[in-house]
Amino acid sequence: MANVVVVGAQWGDEGKGKVVDIYTEFADDVVRYQGGNNAGHTLVVGDEKIVLHLIPSGILHKGKRCIIGNGVVLDPEVFIKEITNLKAKGKFQDDGVLLLSESLHIIMPYHKRIDIAREAKSGAKKIGTTGRGIGPAYEDKIGRRGIRLMDLLDKQVFTRKLKESLEEKNFILEKMLGEKPFTFEEIFDEYSAFADTLRTYVADTTLVLHQDLKAGKKLLFEGAQGTLLDVDHGTYPYVTSSSTCAGGACTGSGASPRDIHEIIGISKAYVTRVGSGPFPTELEDADGEKLRQTGGEFGATTGRPRRCGWFDALVIKYAVRVNGLTGIALTKLDVLSDFETIKVCTGYSYNGKFLSEVPANLDIFEKCQPVYEEMPGWKADISAARTFEELPEKAKKYVKRLEELAGCQIVLVSVGPRRDQTIMLRNPFEA
Image 1 (cartoon, rainbow, N blue to C red):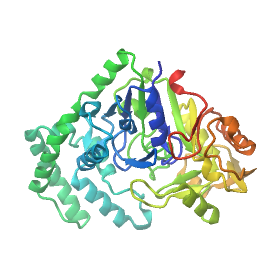
Image 2: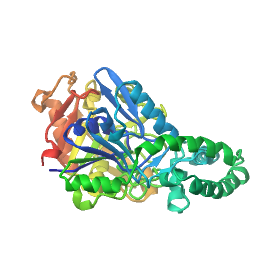
Image 3: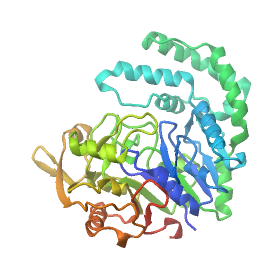
Image 4: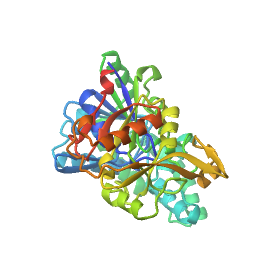
């Protein structure tokens, strides 16, 4: 019996959706533990492309319980639309397999308006948020003035909390940001209607998790974004507003650290980043555009083109360290198939000094130059490979070199977007 956490090992968008979808086959429960609808997981089932923002990828498997934990901030409108879309496609028919933590916090309309207005006023110093209200919602949570799902379901409590929030938020919108304020009625009526739908899915999810653990069920914890976007361990302030690292799986779900047995970091065979912040291996040339176009590197949530660059071994080493990774799932190896030469960053150069680790100081990190090792490309279609032995020799050497640099075993290699385009080297659920 094993319980597995899946985390992004870079700056997000590493292909966690596909990996979680594959691992769900071996799990009983799939738990989303942080973030909001600023995340987008793209899955290809057969010839059908499905994008999920809040609901765990495991919802596409029959008989699996999906839980959205207390560490998530939930936009009710987006959640309900996802349910409606999934049901219309025949992918989700049993409401009983999807649970919402009664303790999760709700994204309100004023969070989104504040988020967008702040970014607009920041100019060149903007963080690059999705404008979905995620950060302001987490601010209210930490400031102990947030509205939780249990509050939304109680009209008396919701009335009181909404009035208190609007007094402050309308002041910020009008006086500080020059934006239109909200009326109590426009939010109360809309969100009260949302509450009627959400009530179907509400549960004490921490209790449910512990009951399932006691019964010997296997749990898969699904994170959003990536290690370098963690609010504590990422490239602050160019980060998200939650704990994206493995520790967030416990605080965001109520599971104990003793219940976690495997931690799998998802990494592309190259690197991408969305939004502002340091990115030493970023390519602003033909190779970068080739990665973007071949890899379809456009945000699942916003459609924004992603910044692209060569694989950064220091970033992966850092992810191994702060998450305690027991394995790496390497995605999009097929995207590199048409390159004559592939570069791998093995260190940084800063003021004439060689750095072998990611610097904590952002000012230093922003000025780091990559030190590259060049490897020959394999110039062959690998999308039909189903075993490691079927890969071209140069592709195998590339994977082995990344494993060596990371100091962590590569347990899965993805050679295409479909479920079947996967090479499973070790199953973490069978540990």
